[in-house]
Structures are given as C-alpha cells and as structure tokens.
Length: 491
Image 1 (cartoon, rainbow, N blue to C red):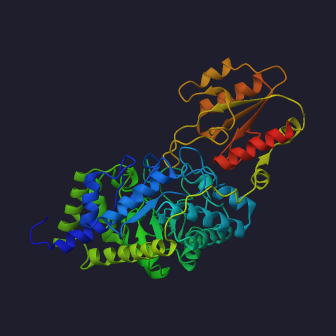
Image 2 (cartoon, rainbow, N blue to C red; image 1 turned 180 degrees about the horizontal axis):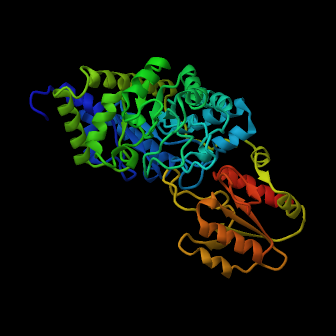
C-alpha cells in the first residue's frame, strides 16, 4: 500500500474494479481480494458450464463479499455469455427491432433477467443502445435495435424496464454511441465524425430514453467524438462523461467503462494509466477484461492511490465512485434477498415464436422460388465466419448441438476448399455464413457453391453481398431454429 494512504482508500480503489478470470471456480487470490473490498467480478463464457455451476460460483463470490457486483455480458442474442456454448435462445436486438413489438422486447428482457437472477447475476452489460447508422459497422451491427433513433430508443427503454423488473441491473452501451463507426474499438480507436447536432438527434436519443427508463448503469465507449472532445476518447473524457452525461443528460447512476484491456483504451498507455484516466474523467466501475491477474490488479490499485495522493484525481473522486458502486451493490443485494433461493427448473418455452423470427428475415425472389419446390433433400454447408471478439466462440445459427448438421464446412484458412463440395443429386444446398462481405474468400466460396449446386446463400448478419438469398439479421440459436423451420416447412 502507498505510504500515508489510509486502508479505507485502498478499499475504495478496490471497490471500483471489475476484473475477469479464467475458470469455473473462484480462485483463492480473487477470494482474498473480494474479502479486502474488491467491488465486482465480470463473468465470461469461459466461466460458464451449467446453471448449477454458475450459481455455485456466484454464491462463492457473495460469500467472500456480500456486496460484490457480479456482471456478465448477456445481450440476449449473438453476444450471449450465459449461452455462449450452446447458442442463445433469444432473437437478438436487430430481429426484435425488425419485429417492432415493444412489449415483446420487454418480455424478452424480463426473461433474460430471470435467467441471470436465477444463477446469482445481477448486472448485465446490456442493452446495446447504439443506433446502427453505419450499416457496415464491424462491431455493433445486429447488436443494435436498428438505424432509427426513435425506434432504438423505444426498444432500449423497454429492454431496460424488462430486465430490471426481473431484479437485474441494466447497462445501456456504448455511450455516447458506437453505431456510426467503421472500425472495432477492441482493435483500434474509432472516430465518430458526426457534428454535434447529428449526435444530439441520433446517438444521444436512446441514451436519453435509457436514463428516463431508470437504467442503473451506462457503459462508456473507447471512441473519439471530435464534435464533443477533440483530444480524448469517451472513456477518458470529462467533457463527455461529466458535462454531457452527468450534466446535460442528468444521469446519476454508475458509469461503467468498456473493457480497459481493449486497444482503444490501454493500447498505448497500459492498464494502470487507463484506469486512472477513466476515474479522473468520471467513470465509477472499471471493467478490466476477461482474464486479469493478481499482480495486474495490484498495479491498478497502486496507480489509483498514487494518483489520488498527488492530486491527479479530483478530491473525493475515489469516494464518490466507490459510493455509487456501493449503492448499486446494495440494490443488487436487496434484489437477491427479495428473490430468495434461486429457481433453476425447466426452461420456459420461447417468448418469440419461430414464425415471428422467420418473418423478420429477408428473402430474395430466388429464395422464395427455390423454397417453394417441395420434396427436395436438403444439405447444409457452413462457411466458418471470421472471429468476432464481441461475439466470441459460439455456434453459428442453425449449427447448435442437435440442430442442422453440415455436410460440408468451408474453414477460415481454406476458402478454396469450396470447390470440393459435391451436392446430392436433386438436393437443395443451404449455405450459411455471417457477414460474408467482410471476407473476400468467403464471398468467393459462396459464389463457387452457388455455381456448382442448387444453393441458397444465407447471411446471418447484415448482408452486403449480391450473392445473399436470405438475411437473418442475427445468428443466435433461436434465429438458427427459425431458419431450420423455414427450410423444413418449405422442403
């Protein structure tokens, strides 16, 4: 501990940190930090095995610190940590936005919250409140409710209302709006070039609705918004977090950073310096990443204490941030007490029907005509998608366990292998990929498969290729089930 710093300051600094770890059981060193005041832990796909295991893990975390905030990145669609291994049973935001039923969105969020609360998780880093104004956005895309700010605002508010009604705190993200970017802040520092008037009329509309709906937290983004702050990315901008979010929009809840291990945050400064800059700018809860070490957390705490001692942090900033986090922690603890012993019975039936999901797809005339030919055998081909850091390793659409079985797979490292595919005589080939246009090799493989067989090309993201016959606007398991049913009912 830094000399002349009272123990309470160290506890306050620990109270702002939300690390991640690898494994399905709580490590001893992390338990010790929780006992010392570590405020939060974020769970990821590698921490999840079964509902019973997650419940045991969260119980062990709360036994070490009853006020610990346990978070997870559960958006109810392509980004699903609770269902990362088997695929999400929810449609995802883009499909919900296309269906356009606000009450349905509220119901989906309530069920997402119920599943999280049942295993002891009381903060979800969702919903994505970004307006997907750039249709080729590489990191938001189907995670957004759409491109219309008013519609996105309505769905965002409903999602927050639903999940918080289930006792799980919401986190509207990625403030002040990540929708108009062409790069991924996991890998770079994106720039939003819109002027202030456009930002007010577009990006900020859903966040204003989120605040009005009572969202407990809002997540920052590691993006440059020159119209507001010429120098700093949003996570490190007092102008964006203080003047705009706190002052103009009136948010008084917990400001959560996007993961500080992302290139857009710590790529040139390191994690300890990034943590100090984020707290100085107005962030309260620091998401550190998916796999942090004891020494890394120690370095971050030391950096915060030094910054406080030399005046790099405003007077009282650590106490202010820790107080907000503790208020959130007490809210989650109250919700746990109200809920009692978690129930982990049989899964509820889908809230959204397969027919509703399939009706949100777009089909080319060619797809409609080919699906209308009855009695044909069907073969499935999977074009493995390029990795997406936000989504992680999860089954692609229909290829969950017990779903469609691919007769042929085009791997990432050998797109030319598509020439080896041989279709059964008279079969209809369903070729499935995600955002094919981002990979010239994938587009080439789809073209080859279409030329050599009676094939329909399915894109489970936002489709930007002339080769695509069906666009699903989501690759969750539910979207995959709807695709299977669409093909089955037509074959």
